[in-house]
Every structure is written in structure tokens, then in C-alpha cells.
Amino acid sequence: MNTVWSGIWIVSFVAFALGHFSRRRTRRISLAVLIASPVIILTIGLALVPPTPPSFLLEWPRAMWLVLPVLAAWLGLAIVGYFAARLSVR
Image (cartoon, rainbow, N blue to C red):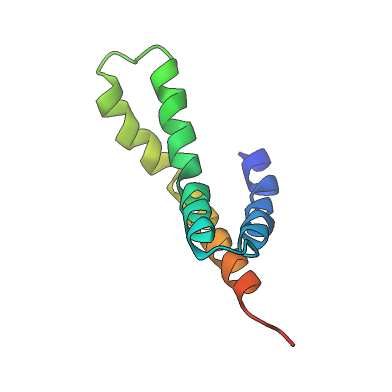
């Protein structure tokens, strides 16, 4: 778990870079993909491993609940990085 928390701050720099895209639609789509990427990666990962005895549909909400603190930090850092790029600090 420590490796997740040590590298999660990078998402704010990625969102900061995405905030500098010239087209508004490209910025918003890339921010949405960045915010949804941990959920997509976890879902694909759960789909590729053999299912536990109940089923994949019962395991997915449990996995989402376990990674909720990481997802909340990911969302917060992405939003802060994106809006920091959009603000002018002159």
C-alpha cells in the first residue's frame, strides 16, 4: 500500500499538463479519462484474474470499497492539478 501512496502525487502533475491543452473539449475528455482510469484499470484487472467463489459481480463492489481512499485522493489531486493549470498566477 505504501507504493500506491508514494506515487499518487504524480496525478496532480499529469492533470496540470492536461490543463494546458489548447482545445477545451480535449482538456475535459482527457481529465475525465484521467479521473476514471483507476476504476477502469481495477475493473480490467478483476476481469482477468480467476473469479472467487461467489462471482465477479460480487467482488467488484468490495474491491471498489477497499480502494476508496486512493480513489478519493486521486480525484482530489487531479482536480487541484487541473484547476491550478487553468488559473493565471501573474
